[in-house]
Image (cartoon, rainbow, N blue to C red; front, side, top):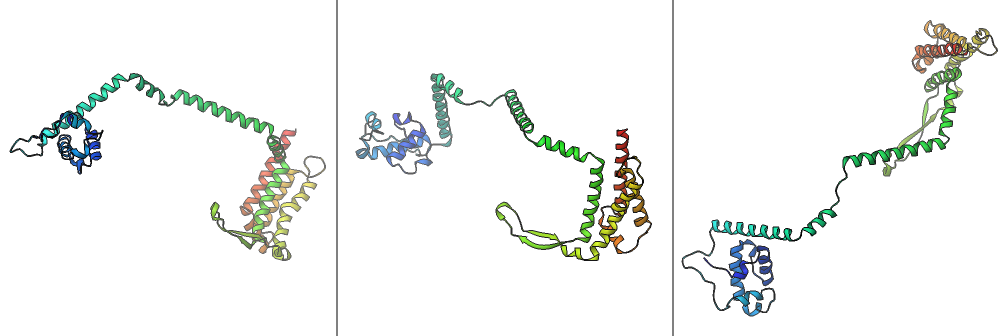
Length: 309
């Protein structure tokens, strides 16, 4: 078997590969370490005239007689056996591990400094405390903003305005009127707003109420019937039948008369014609919706009267 130079044997494989690349040895990547030592020695001997003064490989020429050729045992192939190659690789790995261990043993302070420089994640307790602190800070900021803004006063004013029997009655009548509007005052197409792809907004069709319907009996017939049965007759009845004994209109009487008139006109068919059908179709819930609205106002009036006594 060919014997490599002692100086080359002391080098690591990575150093040998770098040296082979430096001196221009071709196809050095396919060699194992022992094969690379032999190939590199032969290349250095063959190119002594041009590489002898190279400081990178000068130790090779200082320790070896350049005139002596590489010794070969006759009858033995140049390529080493696989078992011997694996053994050499194991020896190299063992040597590398030994060198790494020695370096780590010699420089404990450097390793300790490196470990201290690596930031460690906070503990779960620290994370929980940070989350609690941020939540408390956000809650305090919101509380301060609400306390100094006019929002609480506005909300309280709206609540006071809606917490009356009159407001409840107006709300139920508004729901009925809005439902009837879709039948007697339909929306007509006006124009289309163009799409805005930048914000993902598509085309928007603009529609407005058909005000020309105000000039037809198809509008005033159903609206007049609904106004008479839901507002005019109940107001008249609540003025004559005033259970409060005071001036004005009685809420309980208003809703009682409204329910009675709705039952006579729409349920019993007291008033026929197309207007009755349009009102029943437009008001949410039809006749039952008007009766439920009257019942809600009746209960609210009774509850308010009980609280005032």
